[in-house]
Image (cartoon, one colour):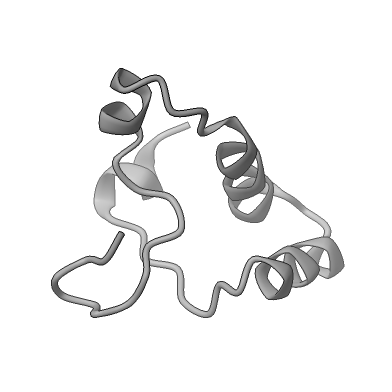
Length: 66
């Protein structure tokens, strides 16, 4: 999936739409949560490299949600 403003592949977006079509998002959801909420930077860096993630965009909703 590509986002119009980034012209780059999106790793984890549109969860509600994907779930409504019974597409299993649990693996990527777990990895995304580990990257965003983990407290071991070595693991975070490894996950970012393994998943080929070079940019992270957080909107206000994601920054303020728990």
